[in-house]
Image 1 (cartoon, rainbow, N blue to C red):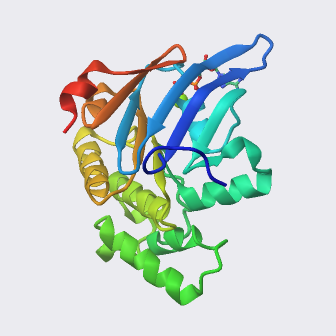
Image 2: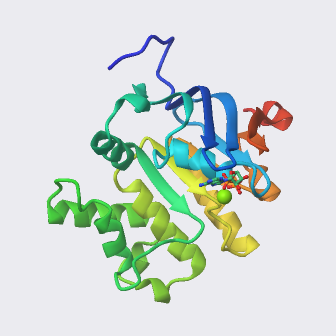
Length: 238
Ligand code: ADP
Ligand code: MG
């Protein structure tokens, strides 16, 4: 499936995309918007509570369908794929990181990461190697066999990031990734995201926290469902 384009395909392309919850009464959570995110970008979307951040993340993460417009993920028009292929596309292309780390409590860090590969036809031995390698990448080589309760909040979020990365997704989607962390630990998680970005990862972070927003290479603001490019993004561009 190909689409006309100039140069490399953007990871995300939204055209006239909107989302209205049917209600009653209907709520327009996303007013029609255009957005392109290129491979390797680090984008932060900032907005107050109720502005449409989770709605946007759910659409981008293929967890919800827009009610108008087109969402292309790596060139694939996501409205044309059935539920089975959508789930496969989600599993292959998107890594999720949430505020609440969502680790399985009775599994080690390593097992939590391995479980992210359980639906792929990857032999157990390879799964183990990959999980160990990605835990090392997030700085947790020495904590691989710890249970979540034996880890700090920052370490738990690193496990969650490792789990999101292990299938080598095209896009890392993070919803308030530092929301449960003190400011020092939050900074170390943002440093980790910076490093993953430097390694070529495409990252989108959603936050209500202005301090987090200041770390973005490109910052978008969402207010009452209207997405706009922030002025400082042009100043901060490399
Ligand atoms: P944020 O994540 O920025 O707090 P949301 O995307 O959760 O904002 O919500 C945006 C708007 O859509 C809000 O007005 C919210 O009340 C509304 N909303 C969210 N989910 C639903 C839903 N399932 N049905 C109806 N309205 C919803
Ligand atoms: Mg939200």
